Image (cartoon, rainbow, N blue to C red):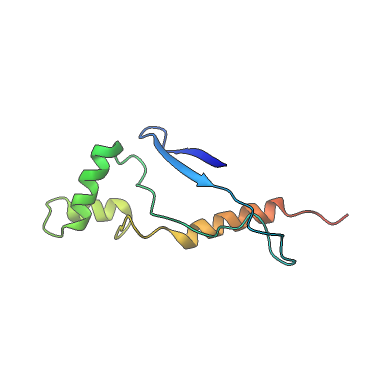
Length: 104
């Protein structure tokens, strides 16, 4: 069943997370595991959908008057189609380690 997750309460970005069982656990693997990511989260406090559209216009057009400011504000180049996969996988791995069954 999908999980509804609100990211950045001020802008009210609603994300859908699908949690699935994809087979029996494999010995040596930690769970949960991140298997797929689609898209990248908008930056926090970007201003909701209108602000995000303005932001995307600015970061995608080197001639836009706010291009450099928005790139700097975002912490570097921003592509909405390329998720922060390494960061997200690390966060899920931390969660899996925290939830790892303890030996008795």
